[in-house]
Amino acid sequence: MVNNPGEALNAKGIKKYQEIIGQGNWLVQTTHPTLATATSILAGYCTQATESAAPVLQHYLRYLQHAKDYALANDPTNFEGFMVSSDSDWAGLYSAIGDVRSRTGGEIKYNGMPIGWISKFQKCKGTSFDEDMELDDFYISTASAEAELHAAADTLKLALHIHHIAKEMGLPVPQSIPLQVDATAAIGKIQGPRGSGKMKHIDLRDAWIMQLRNRGMVDVIKVPGSDNGADFFTKLLSRVEFCKHESRLMTQLP
Image (cartoon, rainbow, N blue to C red; front, side, top):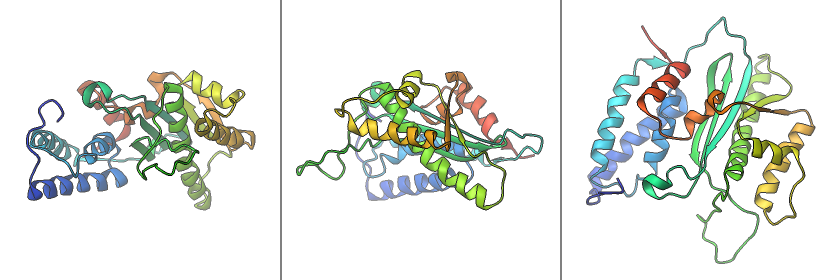
């Protein structure tokens, strides 16, 4: 869509584009986590779609046709309990479309079944105020560790919400939420001393996670990147890798 974008779509074409992505987003929010990353990226073009969107939408609709027979399924023999993982892709689309934003990926599972997920561009709001700042202005993560901290904080917010719901429903959940992270630098930032305040927007997030950890509400766990399920929600994968995660997250109905 960037190398040869073509002419902008007319009003009818943009409306059709928005309808397709809107329907896909509904599936993302309800039953199909495998659509999360692609839908999030495509949603960014809803008001400026071009002629090059046609083959992209065709590919997207082809997958929707394939995915109609897939669903979330609970394995009654799985007793892993409440598990949370977070990851980020630091400016991962820069080489493809020049976007400098990083992407947050988060996955929350209960006994192996996905019950919550995140795939979104990071809006790293800072703590300083500038009268000339536009409402859409945001800080860009300048390091991978910073992007990982934003991802951990965003995922933890959703995990706390779902954790509260599970407790109200009487489901057995651990008192301390296990948060799996594969970035050693981010874990060190959470566990170690903070800086001098020059990066306040980062310090606030890791201090918040540290506070929850000190209260026994979260347990940050280091896991290998290959074992981090949230990685799926941070980037566009090859067909082989995508299918591997698809079979992990969803079950094909008979």
